[in-house]
Image 1 (cartoon, one colour):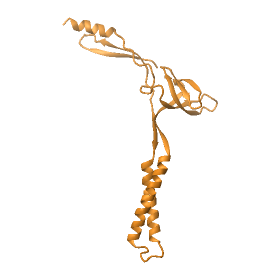
Image 2 (cartoon, rainbow, N blue to C red; image 1 turned 135 degrees about the vertical axis):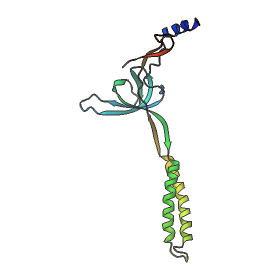
Image 3 (cartoon, rainbow, N blue to C red; image 1 turned 90 degrees about the vertical axis):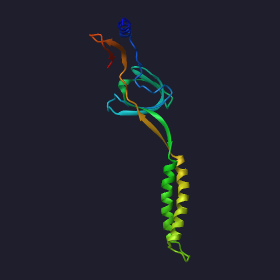
Image 4 (cartoon, one colour; image 1 turned 30 degrees about the horizontal axis):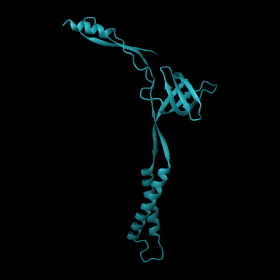
Length: 182
């Protein structure tokens, strides 16, 4: 019974330091896209892409694509995104290619001349299927060549200066107290 008050007193005087980085899961080496507020006369926003070098409580350092390294204050950052990798569009290309090829095959099959079967549903269907498969192959190849980088926005976290457990006045419960720097 005497152990509880001593334990609460020890825990309440312990200060826990939280992580001091503004972007939780983004690590150095990740590819990032940063939209900066330009303090120039036009007050426009500039978007740049690079690799995160360091992240601190009040700034980040980025290696830009042009080889330059810059340290930026968090107050200059309007938007911060991390790359989820590059996406290819093979399945989408195959789908569009199949639809386009099937449509073209059906039109060509219904207008075929020099045959006794011109415009018959069988010839039209066979031409549509053959055109669809040819279109799927061509569309899939085209989709494999097209790449697009996917980006996920990252919110700035408020840096916690410290947290500690505080006993209540009656001694029956413990609260969590955090100091946040703005």
